Length: 104
Image 1 (cartoon, helix red, strand yellow):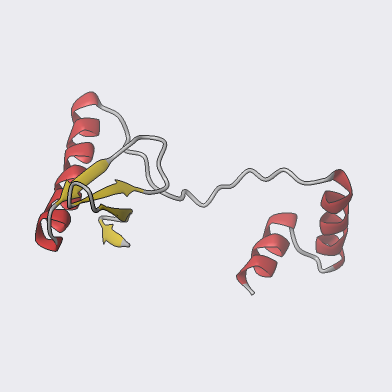
Image 2 (tube, rainbow, N blue to C red; image 1 turned 135 degrees about the horizontal axis):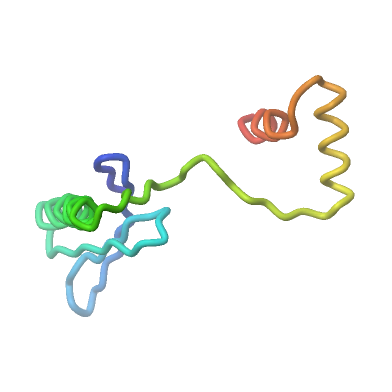
């Protein structure tokens, strides 16, 4: 995993072309990079993130941030009711209750 300016990149290796291919995770926008060695790969990752940020700035758009902290979750109605009731009994919001449970 690679990290730069709050963005995380995943890397795969293509043995046939002997090139590392990477992609920034957690975005709708697609940011890719590649390199033949670690130094090239790290530079390409940083350059790609910087290019994306510059591109957004030129267009007057706010760059997408990975993992905003918001998550839409579908679940069976019965489970939703069970979780909401458990949260109320603890005096918590449903959000706080679920975050507490997932953090453990």
